[in-house]
Length: 65
Image (tube, rainbow, N blue to C red; front, side, top):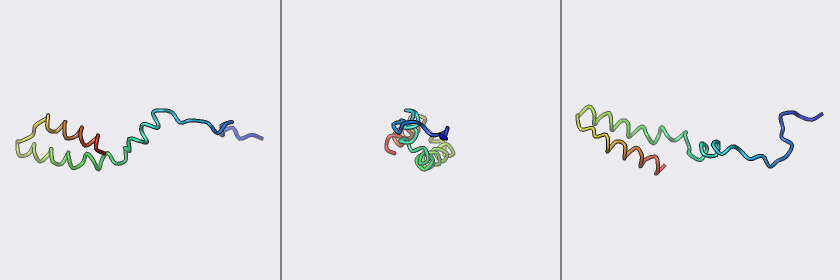
């Protein structure tokens, strides 16, 4: 009797979005964004927050991961 849950061939490729999610390393996103968010909160508290600087820093950190 065949197992219904197994594919017939071994050449099954994962979906493209699954590859993008896996290579994007979402588990390390919090380690990348947390210091930036803390610094942003401190800058806002001190009154020196700049949205452009925040967005550029967050974007660059995403590319450097």
